[in-house]
Image (tube, rainbow, N blue to C red; front, side):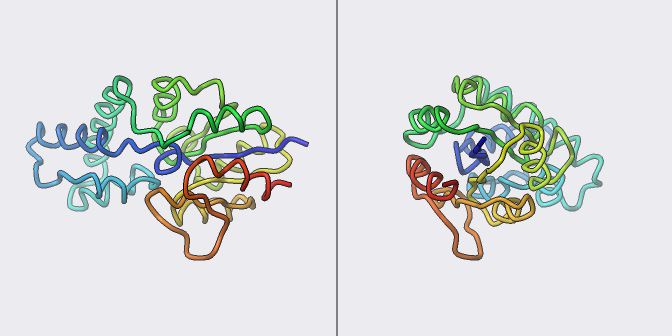
Length: 211
């Protein structure tokens, strides 16, 4: 039987907020749009949402086409910087992934743009632990649909999704898989669920859920 642990990225595997918001603010300032600059806490509240949704939250008074052009420029600068500096990995991440990959299929499903997951994997040299990834930027699908897509195309029998926000839990529900809440992240579910307070705890909790 092929069992999988599928992960959200931001707030679950790393925190890239400081680098990302610095990049976005610099782009906005260069365009004379200082009034739209934000804080790290703002960025954390955006993470997990699709780029069109974030663009509307930041620039609601700008026409959709233009605000997406601006946000795409922000994302290009963000990925340029992340490719150099990376983000802040949560403690014990790699050793946990190494242990999990010996027993489970591992994947990442995020609402990010194309290239973001790849940057995370490449800059921190974690590609060897993951067998598949998917994002909203690549398919245009919801996170729940992308979870199901990864499950189906890899012939996975049982899976669990690990994330930090209510939207992650809703995506797991949509995909029909159990959810494990990363309580150290940026959000919380609206009902009781399995949870971990640090990434290393996933080893025992996943075994419980998938057994």
